[in-house]
Image (cartoon, rainbow, N blue to C red; front, top):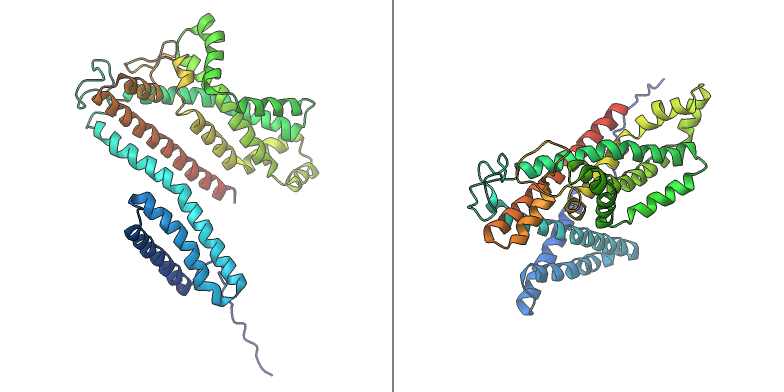
Length: 350
């Protein structure tokens, strides 16, 4: 009797590209770069944009010509992949261009105490080794934190009312949320100015946070609604079958399942308002010193940038670029932190 020996089969990974495919793609990119250089040398095209235009035209053409012998399907696939690659890179070019420009101009404002001092005893036209953005960074963080504490629970609750409860006024709530998402930021600032600043608080951090809430709430609500719709109905049905109530199902099953999505919704809301200037002009105003008093005017990075840019002095403009760099890095840190926390929550759930 012949013994049968079971041989374990290693799982395949068809999504991974082989070395031959990687080498072919590398040769394609190199060929497109050479053609781009030749086109720029023979024509009036010049500079980065000239090279990019020639590269974008050459890469799909080379992909098509190099795969036409393999059949129509392979040629179409190669041509489409090259177009998608060029389009993706084209979308990233403005982002890198902005980051490069902000870094080149904003890094000149940095010195050892730039992030730890404020403008209490320094004017915008003073030398760049004096003053800093501590007051603007702390004010932005305080107002954004207040707005987040208010808007995130309200946004999630409105999404739960629309998706989970399916209340009588769900359509009205959805319509109002969508309408609020199109409200210009200056209108939100005018509303808070007319209803809160004039009659109650005056220019204050509270008023700035309330303007932020109006702008954050639609983003958080709509994103949370879309995330809630991704939860399978079978998961809810299984919870109901075990005897759980709707409230217990929502808070013990549904919300933990989409915790990473809700965190993303909160970060998107923060990114929506972090760089807004118009509503803060009418609500929080500006203050040159670091302050934690929520009942008085408070500095912020957008107003710091706006006020320095309006002065026209070379040092003031450099300070404005420095504030832009700090704001850019702050938003980047928030996004990276959100991705890391989302990944940890996803792994913990699994």
